[in-house]
Image 1 (cartoon, rainbow, N blue to C red):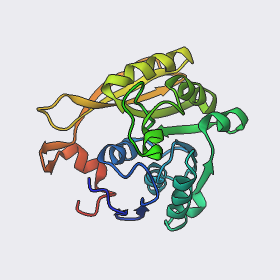
Image 2 (cartoon, rainbow, N blue to C red):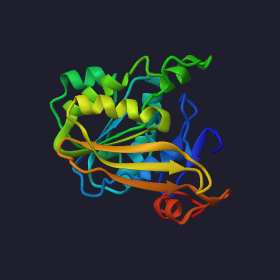
Image 3 (cartoon, rainbow, N blue to C red):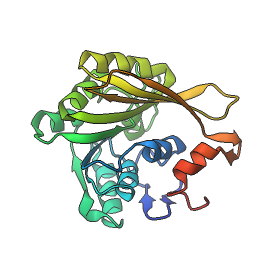
Length: 237
């Protein structure tokens, strides 16, 4: 997916020139597959451009709170919210999720997160991009703790991570009483191994369902499953 200064969807536009992390296919898939239609409150952890919040707003009547650490990304998300059809549903807060969780009294029906995941790895030279991709500012333990505090007893959190890191988050989540409801393995095509896991967790889950979703039939032709999910959003579907 090209890293342009903006990305145009059917019902909203994402300006991303001031954000370290741009719109990606994986993030779009997470936003489209998260079940938000019957939720009253949604929390977007690490909002970036505000993409996941805007995708949720398009399919729900929920009040959506987006928390973003980086001031420039926070400002860009705020502008994207204001210029969308749903400004009254959307609020962005410039804060770490650790500080937000320490003081927030609200509990959320749905939490969405595409968190930083690299740990003890080579870092990008651009500081803000490195911050968005590495666990220095948000460890899996801290993320699990925040989700446990902020999620309603009947709520679900949707977290996307590379396959190689998802088990580390699952172990941290388990320590905070969060059990898997569903694990969706995402792969480029039927000929590829999964590269992402979308782990759906909650406090009252007892059985985990395994699903697999391919993005492409054969590049550049999208699979039927991916096309169905993204049809409400992508201009060329």
